[in-house]
Length: 205
Image (tube, rainbow, N blue to C red):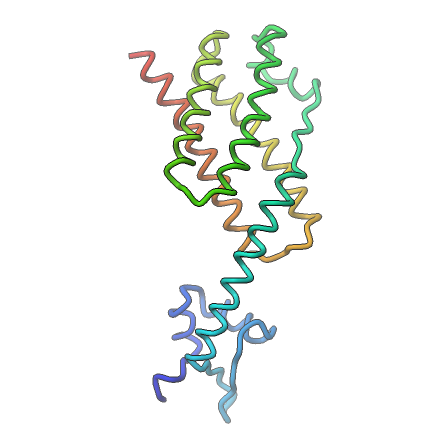
């Protein structure tokens, strides 16, 4: 077989996915495929290259669509009842409670800016600044490191729940687009959470 042609396993290796994924894409017409007289799937290398270029362009376009539309539709829907069930929230006065609500909005705004930006370094700096803000506010209101982490995870969970709702209602259903988006959300919020822990640890030394 000429190197012009790729087998199913070679195609999977080329794209870095499982062979069953290639089989599924081929059977559903997502990628160009040919059949040998024996029924085996074969892929032309030049067709694969063109498909990759087109698919990447479509993916980038869909990603921008998700960032532009989905995140702007995301809202924190947090009832007072949900908050008052949190042990850390019960320790806060009214002013502190309002500040924590604002922190939730700040998290969404910072995340929106991060996902719209291509600069990884500035995004990390923003995440760390947000984490430092959460930690300082928690210490100011006598929350310990566990309670500060619980407070942040509460707002992150609500953010993710809102995003899942957007995903379910969205017209863009590309698994690649959404998996990349949620990976970036997780990476950003993980950085915030780690900074909260690092800040507490630094103050306790």
